[in-house]
Image (cartoon, rainbow, N blue to C red; front, side):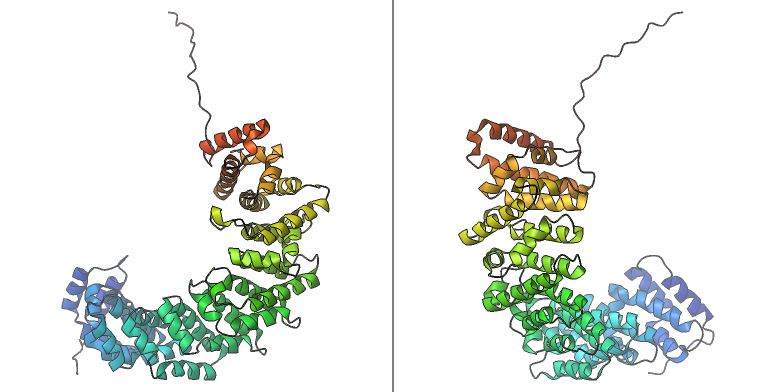
Length: 523
């Protein structure tokens, strides 16, 4: 439709600039009032015909963005679907970015989602969004990603992106095969964002074999940066709660294990592969899908790397220890790790009490705490008999090989170091006291009790919380044990209970009122 434009654009542009510069969001009433003065079709026509005029594009794009953000503005978009379609193909990145956002606004404010999605189908919006994703500038690509996410939030939208005939996800594969490394990275980022939306979308991605794009990129030995980007995005994808059930059905886990074992692979890539593998195995659901031999192969690969690294305090050794901690986060993983024929558990214990390598000690303490159940419920901390016996043996052996001689000396040593190490020590002791032998060791060392009951020893909130949690864990374990028959332990229990009652933070001692004595005034 031909639109007569005002001869003088100055009043329109001035009003649009003021509208766009209004701080915060506009409301429906202000949008209606503005559009009564300057109808939407006029604004769009001015933008289309005068985009090359200095100041027009910036002003009108900002103004239209404010309009479409409102419920009223978004409700007008179905009548201007051709503008969205044309805008997604415009040469201007500003207009393309606005059009991508318009798709999101349309769906987020729609009172009839099915009708809005029909508009997206009718005007072939989704393929255009994919083009903006891979070829747009940073802002346009981000806006396109957000728009595609908005489509995928609805069941009817999922069928647009993943139709039963497979045409659309074949389009994704074709684009990836013909694109630059930057574009391929954007596609992987899109898959990761979609994967996290729901298990339904994740299942569609898995069924369409799009996870294979991660395998292809990770296997690309010609571009280390592209491989690292793919690993970083995979790490993001693994954070989804339903990731394990799908990833463990692919060859990705085996691929990560192979990377860890391959000495020719850069250490940064090996580190990321270890962390991702550990994160995959950090949930109980993983063990319903994983082949135990695959976990064993991973542990052996990490064991070999730690042996090669030896006493070196490197990022790779710290990542390997962190990965072992995540692998042992569940009962299944901890039992398997402690029962492994490899020496991975020994690496964790030795690193946890190695004061010569601060980074490794910190990683080792946190890993050991996690394996011992710091992040599990109290009734799930103790493992099976074989795992528990190996844990006890490893800690007593580590103590015997140091001047401390006893585990209590190792625990105390960690608690007497700087705040970061001390916090990790609190986590470890909190988890270990679920075992009688460890509880006895802790309670037999007065300095440990003095530290965990001292509300003044920590100044940072996380340290205060960790100390208090440790104190409460020891107290609870002691009260439920039969050690209270010993008078010495009974006294310790009283001291711990008093500290628990005082709470985790600094408290002022109760002050008695003091009489105030003053000399008499004389005239």
